[in-house]
Image (cartoon, rainbow, N blue to C red):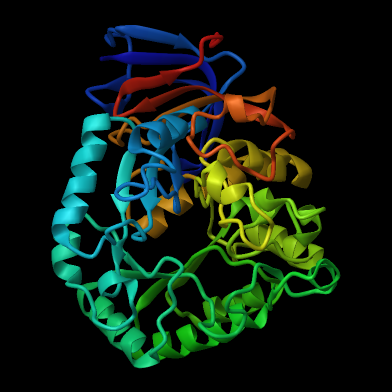
Length: 427
């Protein structure tokens, strides 16, 4: 289908574009258009921002194995409603994504649903047990874009060293969430005065920083490329800043919840604020916001982790960590941009959830350049909406932002040149 999107404010950070202009789509690609372009569908985007489809670096789809929490159908619909056209899913499914057949099955299921593009991470070790390495080459052929341990740390540092050597040999990226396997084990909240007052077991910042020191030493020894997932602390960010100055091949993302909230948002044991890593202090939150501006943080992810009522509506310490985020990624990133102020910040914010995330994942998306895949989101940056369970397409209805009024609403999502989602009141 040939689509002509007219009168929209096109923001394409990859090409330095922020202007009111038309966009043309043919055969699933962005094209130049022109007088001889015959549109099958014309979309008037007056008052809307036209941007590359969002790229989310961490979205748990809960298949296979946890369909009672969410299904591909529900979560990919949530992705469409949130403007996310490409997403990376961690390997901590059941069974774990440690065999090519499992990866191929997930990719096949995603193709049948035919909405967002799904890009799995393969398990770094068999069963995520931190002992035997997986066959990374075979997993890559099956469709994995990198290798991770999800929330399971590797106890034996020699195993991690060998994994990084293997990855370096073949040019793979290792995705790691820095956490010491012992310090803070079993903790449910940020170690600090609030956790002490509430009687909650703590996860200290040094759990993150000790792990980062180890990772950077192994990077120096192996030369492996590492992406650090969901950094949560000011001290951790300072170590990453130093590592980048040193020239280590490292990138980092943060979860969108940590961009706005602190441990104080736990309030009176609100289990919706039970996250991994935990919400940290206001100082850490402010450092994350600053690190987005200076480039220490390369991307923002939704850290989408749908949890069902049976596992969430429990005392804080017993509740499963996680929150829905696919439908909030855009609005919460825009909220950060609005609070920073300045027109240039909007383009920078969109870059963090499009082209910068795509570069980390090694995906040829996140751009509206001619010849690029026609993955596009149209959104109204001023439209306000309230975060309510009934408004979320995700099967996971739990988020610490329930009741918040946010600005920025997706009006249409185009995937591979097809309008995959359109809000009924789209102009």
